[in-house]
Length: 258
Image (cartoon, rainbow, N blue to C red; front, side, top):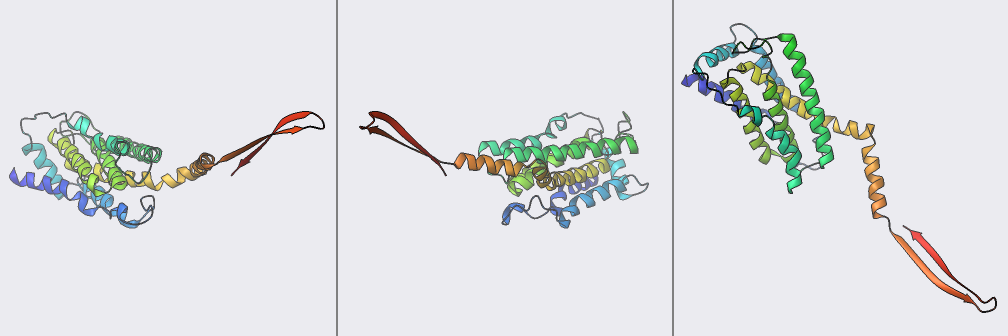
């Protein structure tokens, strides 16, 4: 039992070690640019999780040990039902509290929406293609964990937007979500590993797609127009006049925009 717990702790704690460099530490907005090193974490996690589908693999051994030795009395902890959404909510809302992020609220919504749509599509497609039975034998849609994918999508969005200071806390919440999915016998270890990898990859893709949406919907052009209109100045010069010869009076007005 102790050996299994050590294995699970190591499994969920090594995720940040493969993370990309903090994009907030360099000049320019690199968070929306594809870099090959960003694939390291998701590829390793997805490969390890998929390995659990093979017979007699180390991941399968860990899965069987967890199913038998972890939480033998099958206690239920429902915290994972809510924890999965915490990183995403924080990603969208933290900037509204005064914390400086890399993008405005609109851009965060676009990146988050893209990431979660991609994640949900991949999750549901794979779940009902592989049809792996859950540890509690309730359904045949275990691979991979949607709760874990949701949590890690939000965690990676947090890391990209606010750096590792807040990102580490988000990853801790995501790892806890993954652990509880195994603890509650709702998922195998491999399901959780793959879910984490897919979540990270989809979050990165959400930011990669952000410049595409801006060009497609001409968002930057509209912002530039609004800003120029906001910064425009008007000068109005008015002067009265009177012509004694014609006994006429009036008011001349000149408006200058710049």
